[in-house]
Amino acid sequence: MYKICLFFLMSALLQIGSVQAGTLTSIPSSAVENPKAFWAAVMEEFYGRYDKRLKCWVGSGGSGKICMRPHLLASVPGAAGLTHYVAMSGYAPTSDGGRADCHACSGKLGLVMLRGESTHLTLVARNSLAEDAGSWGATPSEEAFRVVRLGQGNHGWLMESGYTGQGYTEGGVTVFAAIGDKIVDLGFIPTHSDNGGTCGDGIGPCYVHTYEILTDPDKTTAAFGDLLARKVESTNADAPAMVRVPFAQDELKYVAPDCLDAALGK
Image 1: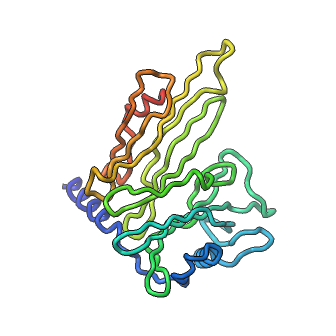
Image 2 (image 1 turned 30 degrees about the horizontal axis):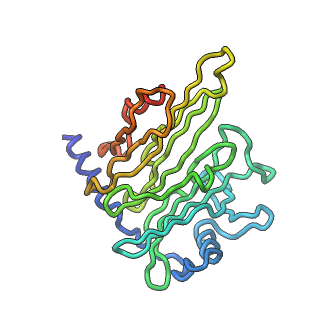
Image 3 (image 1 turned 60 degrees about the horizontal axis):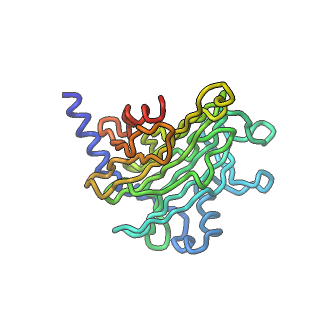
C-alpha cells in the first residue's frame, strides 16, 4: 500500500512540475532585451546589492555570506511564452574575503526559472540559490551547462563536471530541473573515465572511455523522458554505442544502468 501511495505522490509532483510559483518579481519584463540590465536586476532580486570590492553580488546562503555572479541565461519559447532559465555561480568567501582553494571546496550555484507576466517577470521555480557545485571553490564553467528539453513541455539543465586523482580522471553530467516550484538535483550520470596519468612507459595499458548525454524527448509524453548516453570514444571495442538512461519515477532521479558503469570500466 505504501509503494502505491508513493507512486501516486510522485506522479502528482511530476504533473505540477510546470505550475508557476506565482511570485511576481521586481525584474521588468523588458530587461530581457538588455543583458546588462537583466543581470543587474536578477542578481539584486535574489542576492542583494553589488559589492565593488568583491566584484560580485553578496547574499546569504547556508551558513554564511556568498559572493555571486551571472553565469548563463537560456530563454525557451513555450505555450505560456518565454521561460528564462537562469544560472548564477559564485563561492563562499573565506575570512579574508578570498576564495577557498582546495579540491573538496565547492562553489555555489543558483538556478532560477522566470517567465514574463505583464510588466514584470514571475518566478516559476528556484533552488536554494546556494547549492554546492564544482571544486576548487568554483562551479563548472559556463560551457559546462546546457539547457535541454527533458520531456513534453519540460526543460532542465545538464551540468558537466569531473575530477582527477592519483592519475585517474572521472567525469559525468548532473541533471537539474523543476518539480513543482523547486529546482532539484535529478541525479548524476557518469560519462568519462581514463587513467591517463598512471599508464604507459611500462606502468600499464592506458584506457579512455567517453560518452555524451543526448535527450530523447519526442519518445515520451511524460515530463521526464529517458536520456541517451552516446559513445564518443573508447579503447574497448566492445563498448556499447548507445546506452539508455531511464528516469526512475519512484526516486525522481535519472539512474545510470549497470551497463554504462561497465562501459566506463567501473
